[in-house]
Length: 463
Ligand SMILES: Cc1cc2nc3c(=O)[nH]c(=O)nc-3n(C[C@H](O)[C@H](O)[C@H](O)COP(=O)(O)OP(=O)(O)OC[C@H]3O[C@@H](n4cnc5c(N)ncnc54)[C@H](O)[C@@H]3O)c2cc1C
Image 1 (cartoon, rainbow, N blue to C red):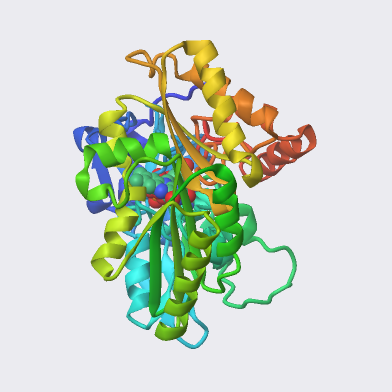
Image 2: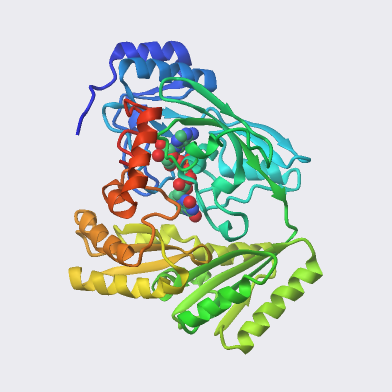
């Protein structure tokens, strides 16, 4: 693979004149940062550049472009596809100082924010005006708006409000050569030419650095009914999903296979709302605007599901604390990291009706290839998105590529999507050509060549 030389000291000096001392982290200060949320992957390049505004981003990129300097963009570094990993010859540009909430408009129901603002900060600012920014994920305290746009993040409430793409009205970005592209649309309807923002959403930082965004807000629901249920078989999971979809206020439908729930429930008694004696578990959530009506509809939904034998056991939340506790069972990545040892994570989309068949086929394929293994399965099933974690023993990390080949072979056989919401990053780039049609891949290459002909932005991401 082609490599450029590490950034020269005079380039670093020139960048310092743009961003000032506060805008630079050098040497050990830069290396102390990990580019990955779950393992230590230090920044190997000489500096982390921290511009204060769009103009500084543009001037730094123009300089890097003129010198052929590669750049990796950092948001909150919670991405799980290795998209933020920076090598010795790459400069990091971090949006961390560009974190202002510029405006919350309660009439238009929009938030205008800088890209380094965290998801949680935006949610809190919206909440202050009785509004909701509905993108929600476990890493919201650290993940940034820019990162969620770059990865087109999904999360827990996609079934109701869609992915990030559906919640961004406009954005501003800086191209590889320093050109500022302002597409800060505030309208729900705007067909004035190409919808430029869509090129950047999900582009994983390869087409430009997102610096600002206009986000679509929604009225803050005032009721939240949550149930944690166990189910006797996969047909019941599908039956419950079908019923839940008829709840007008359905906001989440998360499913955990027994392998996942058993692991979590046996390592934390507080995360054991029901006995771990069934093959499937689900969190069903409905958020609405009328206490009595919503509670009655949710209770009726659960009663019918019980009477039809879809549910084996159920616990409903009676307080905000209980809501949090039930969701905590689903958000147990730290238990997985601790108890599974090294594991290879997967984030795939599979036809909902065949998701359990996929899980079984994956287990069979892993068993044939590796003998002993451990696998956990869970996901945003209502969105056809399943997360799988696979551990094959102490050599898991060393044999990661073999595990990936094995599991992605099954994904391909099931005509699934290589990644549902985490993106390709650097971790899955070897598998991209097999999972997209040649014409689509060719167009991706053409788009990237047109926008960043030197491939200076996130060089090792995607392809
Ligand atoms: C505990 C946990 C739970 C998670 N749950 C979910 C989930 O439910 N759904 C989901 O979709 N993801 C989830 N994620 C993954 C992660 O939170 C998302 O991918 C998030 O969007 C990353 O945001 P970030 O600011 O941390 O981006 P980073 O990790 O810093 O960057 C991710 C990618 O985007 C690029 N990038 C970052 N900022 C910009 C910018 N301003 N302009 C251009 N490119 C940029 C980076 O170069 C990199 O390629 C989870 C992660 C963790 C650790």
